[in-house]
Image (cartoon, rainbow, N blue to C red):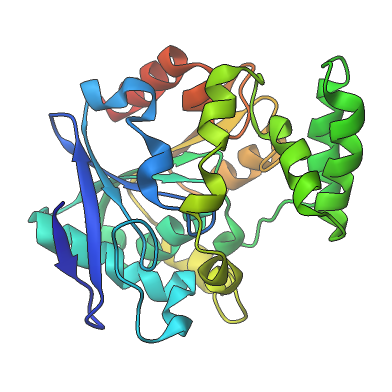
Amino acid sequence: MPAFTAPDGTRLAYHVVGDGEPLICLPGGPMRASAYLGDLGGLSKRRRLVLLDLRGTGDSDVPADPSTYRCDRQADDVEALRVRLGLERVDLLAHSAAGDLALLYAARYPRRVRTLTMVTARARALGVDFTTEHRLEAAALRVDEPWFPSAREAYGRVWDGTATDADFDAAVPFFYGRWDAAAEAHAAGEVEQTNERAADLYASAGAFAPAAARAALAGWDARVLVLAGERDGGPLPRVAAAVAELLPHAELVVQEGAGHFPWVDDPDRFTQTVASFLG
């Protein structure tokens, strides 16, 4: 697989899927290998997906300094990838926790971003976060699901910090718009694909300076798509709307019936929405 060297000397790998104009894709987790993105529901038929394995995940090397797992310190990794690809401006797609990385990159290098697609993405970099109440509000939408009674108790323990491994397993259906064979297969790789040590450091103290990031992006000219899942609690659609309001040229789309992985829940609708936005 192709690779490049980050500014601190860490070797980083990326994977290329499909043809067409490149779309740099940043995985969430946090710190989950890009393999879980797959071809984003067939989006590779419309764009050439450049899937970055963040440092210490997938085929990328573990850095010598663990403090570089902090997401603001990974923004220069994204810039090094842009240089490696020889692109003047990039189209970025960020899923989940990678929303923070993408926003921090944009705040540092605003002229290097042409478009940003935020898929069920975080925005702590702008001072917006998701609460336990948000998560439980979204969970209540699933009350008619056959797995709900036992999963709801486990889900509550996930967010109050008392969950066991069995609780995490039981709560997984809440992250998908529908719990079927495709969702189950997609979820099966999470533990193996995630660098837990890196995940603990990703949003550690000092990572975010929301006022500075908002100021840096106040006059940003990039177009932004904020795509939320109707059934997702991180972010709820109204929280995603609040994120979109903070960015000058952002539009909000709520994918009906989707959870946290909308390309798994409805690949056709997801690819149509993103491809239409990218033009």
